[in-house]
Amino acid sequence: MSIIKYILIFLVSLGIAFFFYKKYFLAPKIAFPNLQLQNLEGESVSIDQYLGKPVLVNFWATWCHNCLNEMADLEKASKILKEKGIETILISDENIETINAYKQRKPYQFTYLKFSGEREDLKIFSIPTTYLLNKNGEIVYTKVGEEKWAEPQIIEMLIEKAGLD
Image (cartoon, rainbow, N blue to C red):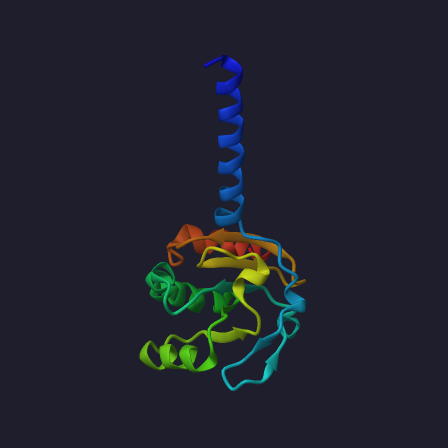
């Protein structure tokens, strides 16, 4: 095989790898004010109601092993972050009954919201996917995948990125 064929195979492989990296490992930009959300009572909610304070937004699902693995850590972190002025919101595209059933089994003190569309509509193909919005609603940090949220350096980083240090 000639060197040109090897180079072409390498370039095609690199392109495929980049496509999958971008799709599954990078958090997409989301227009948070446009999200159609509901609380667990079925009432419409807007992210805009959180403007003026930073918000940690975690997209998750009850069937997601990595999402459930990070829940206890996320709750510990959210208690510390709340004292600093950062709210924590969990958003799922599952039905409200499923989210409520999970909340009853695991009484974490999060604000749970239901996204009215499907996660894939937002180009979120991997969960958990987490965003930190500053007080102006701008995305200042993203994380795709499970995180050890209660680690002091993670909490400090979130506080700093939120502009609260």
